[in-house]
Length: 443
Image (cartoon, rainbow, N blue to C red; front, side, top):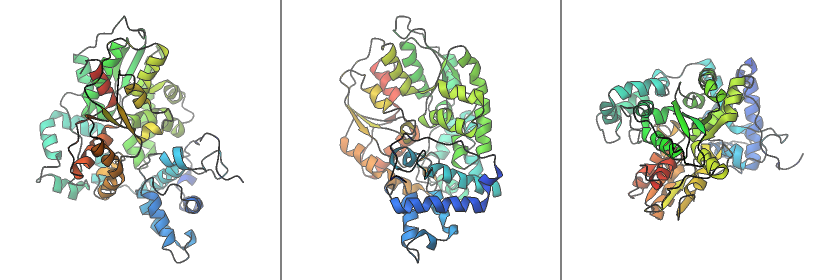
């Protein structure tokens, strides 16, 4: 048996349709096998709160070993996992193909799936992850929705905390009355036929966040791609299912994967690339869906055709060359590399993209923001989310850059709030593609 692994990590399909996947005894056996390996290694102690919680359980047990820990005490370890995948991708020496065959995030996912298999979560918790329904309803009365969800609203936020468990201090994303799909339809983008990349075609998978909460991100991406000769279509059949994945609802994720891959297949067959505008969603399309539905040809085809938006711009630059018109920014950039961008194993594409801007001064911050999707806004997690994100917020505050950017819009907002909690005044958080659009004069 060798210590550690030199091979690239590989992931096994998630066997969620096998009854053994939900069997309590078999799950406990695997939890104890993996936790014992983690206890003996401890390389991940500083990644997230799951590992300190696990190691504290072991260290404070009567035996000082895992056999002294009750299985009922494992739940806080699972609850602290944000499924960021960084332990698997960047730290763990025992991931497949190592014989230890350790995949900590997918084991946490299995635990949550088994929990869900036995009992539904509370009603309010289930409603929070219905992003499409919530987005459509909030868009109908976005000023009212934004008033009610503002962290400064002393009337509604305490009630939201009590009913839904959303911490009253957590910043929440705003909603827009005109979704990205509506704006794209009303404001066509003229394709630059003189661009070196002219002839490319791409479907912009809007994602639930960009469609309902961040249409400016989508419009910036569309403008940049049009400037570079790319014909685009905005398509949004439904959410990628990341909120459902976080709670272990693999059947719902599979349903979404089938629906979205079927809707995008005609475009792929016509030669369109697929560009996802949020890294969590790109990760789902590229990697998670093929593990959940390994025999689905449409899902596999979509996985092979999908780019993250920063990755796609860099691909244009390398293969074709960028269109003229990029000008220096009026200030420097603090760029956070999102965990789900790192988990795509594609390199720092947002940094590569921004460094294509003449004279760009980019400070790269490659550490977890602590937000973890919907995880970080919950009352049970908000303090931990702030603690985990404190080093990132401190770097942004101390750097004093004009621009703050993250590929993950939720992480960007969380970092900005972290800067405020440290007494700083953060710049308005942006997606890197919005900064790139500014360099083209397209804002």
